[in-house]
Structure formats: C-alpha cells, structure tokens
Length: 132
Length: 260
Image (cartoon, each protein chain N blue to C red):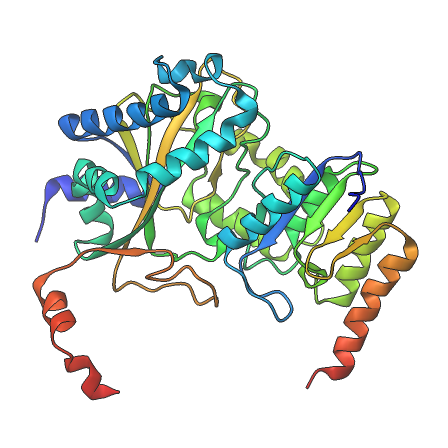
C-alpha cells in the first residue's frame, strides 16, 4: 500500500482521562502514536499531555498555536476535541485557517479540507442526538 | 514527637515545595556505577556522562532513554537503592508504608529540542496529589541544564489560569512567568525531594554539558489516589513497596472480606 507523504512536522497530543467513550493509559497511547509516526518516517517526540482539570483544553490550544502551515496534528480520536461546541468550533476554525492536517487515528481520518472538518462536527451532532 | 531535623525540613518543604539534600554517599556510588554501566552497554564505549552528546547520536536519544528505562525498571533493585539513598526524606514526606512509580530517566543534551518537558505538574496526567518526587542528576547541574520550579503559592495562581482562562496558553504563561521560575542547582550526589504539585519543567539545554537525571515518585499506600478514572492507581502505576506489620497481617488474613 502506498503511504501518502506529508511534508510538515508531526506533533501529537494525548489526554489522560476519558475522551468520548474511550480511555487508554498514556503508555499505550504512546505505542500507537510511535507506530503511526514510524509509518510516515517521522521522529516520534513524546506528546505533551492535557491537564486533566483544564476546562479550556489549554494544551491543545497551545500546540495548535505552535504549529505552522501544513504541519500535522496527530490525535487519537475526534473525541479529543472539546465537548463544548463553542470551544470546539473555535479550535476547528483555527486548524482550518492554519491549514493543519489533523490525523484522527481511531476514525482512520485525516482532515485537510473544509468538508472533512465539517464531517467531524457532524459526528458530534449525531452523538448529541443519541445522548440520554 | 519532636525532631529538630524534621522541623527544619518541614519548614523549608512547606515554604518552597522542595528540599535539597545529600544522597547516602555509598549507596549513590553504587547507583551511579550501575547507571553508567547500563549507558556504556548501549554505547559500547566509556566517557563522562556529561559528554554523552559527543559520544552518541543525539537524534537517537529517545532510543537510549527507553533502553535505560527498561533496564533500571526490570526489577525493584535499582528502585530499592534509590529508596535507601533517600529513605529519611521519603519517610519525612510520605511515611513508611509506601508504593512507588517507575524510575524515569531524563536526558537533556545541549541544544536538543526534542526532550523538552514544558511547564507542568504531575497531576496534569491524573496522578495523586499526595505523592513526592525524588529527583537527582548524575553530574553537577545548573541553569538550563537543570530543571525549574515555581513556588507553591505562585503555582496555585498559574494553575487557576490553566484551569479557567480561555484567553491564555502555555506560550503566554512561559513569557509571563519566566522570571519567576527558579533554576535548581544541584551537585553530583545531591537530590531534591519535591511535591510534583508545584509547577516545574525544563527548556532547551543551552549549557555545554548533557544532563542525565532520575525521577521517581513515592506515595503513602493509604493516601488518596486520583479521582480521575485512569490507570494511575496501585498496580498499574504505583507498585507496593514497603509495609508495616499490621498491613502484612491483613494481607495474610482476610479480615477485610468480612465487611464486603
């Protein structure tokens, strides 16, 4: 299988608390991430972790601020994005504006276009329909 | 029971969130030798650890880190030596019935951008608030070769911002508080016991020598674990380490089952 090439740097991010319906100990998130980086021949740097008590996902916002045009943000899942819609939209808008490729490993999705970013928002909408 | 030595320690620990002390000289000599031998096993040559960056491909620093981590944690022996070298201060802070985490290795080569651990506390990743961290380098360290800490009072102020402020980020916080970060100076054979609730971290090492250091967490076995649903619990994160007779007694006989 041909692996798509991404020219920008790869930066990853993890959470040490539940995200969406998932929880995975940090050391296993590292294993998955390291494997993903190797697939694209990128040097794996340990991800910075989101403070478990942060209400504003300060780590994710700080990482995005440090990224440049065409860089790649590697997340475990779309559910690493904030549950809070206002905050999520702000973050997604920033990612689109900076033309960051966002890799969501669990969903096997790389969001690079407006349409793909819109689809992510659709996931959250459907899940909100199904919430008890 | 009053103990003057403890009172001096306690006063400084409460004020600064850390205390610097000398590791037991003979035990540290053994720790140092074991550690160096593991490094040399990987590099196939001997050199002063502070000159590591001149003797190893820095791009592979993470490979070395993982190798060292796996070697020193393959059994409890290395951790037992660390405990022995700092037992008085571990007892002062968390008592005598304790569990411990893995011993972590930091390698900070001059100019290496890949080993930065930004401003953080250990409970960022959902660890217990009731643990201490024993940290020591294998060479003299100061300034950017070392790590920085913030006072407990200032840490709380910054943590409030981290928790609530939508308009801030770590770049802004670094800029705002850089002058208030205190660089830890430590000589070979000295260690720090600190509450990892205080903000700490490192930046790119701009000095001329590499820093190798160890950090390991100890927690009283009966002190609170995190309330977050994660793996930072006894078994998966903290390994039972030392107990007293009543605990041993209840491990042997199932009296506690009667209340289930």
